[in-house]
Amino acid sequence: MPRQAGILNSALDAVGHTPLVRLDRIAKDAGLKCNLLGKVEYMSSGGSVKDRIAKRMVEAAEAEGKLIPGKSVVIEPTSGNTGIGLAMACAIKGYSVIITMPEKMSMEKEAALRALGAEVVRTPNEAAWDSPESHLGVAQRLRDSIPYGIILDQYRNVNNPLAHEFTTGPEIIEDVTDTPSTPSRPSSGKVDVFVAGAGTGGTVTGISRALKKQHNPKCIVIGVDPKGSVLAYPDTLNDKADDGIPYVVEGIGYDFIPDVLSRGPETVDHWIKTSDAEAYAAVRLLMKKEGLLVGGSSGSSLGGTLAWFKTEAGKKVADTEGLNVVVLLPDGVRNYIGKEWFLDLSLKGEPSPLLHQIKDI
Ligand code: PMP
Image (tube, rainbow, N blue to C red):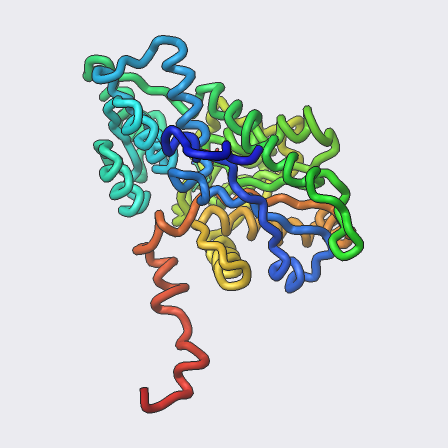
């Protein structure tokens, strides 16, 4: 679905409609015969895949008469990107916003939120999801004490997976089916494999439904979950040895199963557990080989995909010309410019191989 032509009414009309980009250089280096494609969500107007659900949750609440301009206070617990999408929508529509967000989430997200007019409350990383101190608990307490406070609740709101079933999924299907197969670029004409990380799980659940129901029932959907989180299925994958270990990557993984995540084989065929090290190595590839300034969870998705290609099922796909493997890249580096992992791969990276040979400059 291309973006509407001509002048847009607001930044909300530039939510989604993101490009599907060939990751040919990474595919070649990994020895893949299949096509490796990235859905680049940082090109959405608020900078992430979560703009889509923010827009849909706000518009649905408006249609139900739940939001009153100038009065309503939209409160949401988030790892940041849903907050940024909501703050953007609410700046345009005239609602106040309070975001509750664990301390580990980047300063850059907080800065973007405040720049969009939202207030931000930080919560302890170690607070269990159901404790009153967690970002969910604090949001509920704020809602109970603020007149006209409302939580749209991305963890339970059906508009979260629906936004992906009705926009992200169909965009991927359209871009793949619109691209003809040629001798130099063979294509099955279908989405054969789809990979996404899960936070609320709305992205992987909604896109899987679009792909399996409307497009290719045999599409293999792979969920990516960081070590230390409990979202992978079956539960035996969530190794007790990793239980609760902190991970740096933001936006994916949880200590509870959100209602909107359908994690069984009807939706997600395989789950892959990833480490921070794998994620940041894959971010480096996306930046240096493909010129894509993505965030950490994009590295988790790609790192998980490259690990899956080493499994039996993955090898068959990797070795088949024309199969289309789509990897969701949820946000961009804007959210992480000052984070240690990004400084390590940029300013503190290896010295320039060209410049260090020249002595007198
Ligand atoms: N990556 C990032 C950077 C995110 O902010 C999120 C949202 N929490 C996700 C991945 C996962 O998306 P979802 O909540 O739809 O599972």
